[in-house]
Length: 164
Image (cartoon, rainbow, N blue to C red; front, side):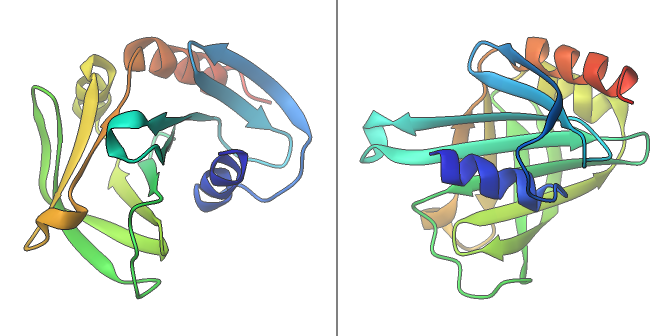
């Protein structure tokens, strides 16, 4: 699991190294701003007993220009790094974006980069689950649990506003 979190951080624009400038916890979310990073990120990893105890990881970071979401699922087996996939992106009760672009980062990881839009952040903050429904590929469609997302995003905003 720690390897997945490190990979998620690297894929979210983080360059390796253990030094932390700021770090806090919200439930099982980690909110951090590492000294070598430009922006803060919120990450959560868990094992799903109902899915063969597979690992799920999500990393969210944002700036005034973009929102970046990285999803890692060890049940995926993407073939082409750099491939652009299309998926409907939603929460348990609201659509975020139809046919959103997701880039394959490695065999178990996709990354979505969206122009900053406060309404996306508002929908994410109310979510209990995030879903990706890939076009023509029900096997790879996924739902990730994001409990306490609102609190995690509030802590992420605080981190971002106070980063040095």
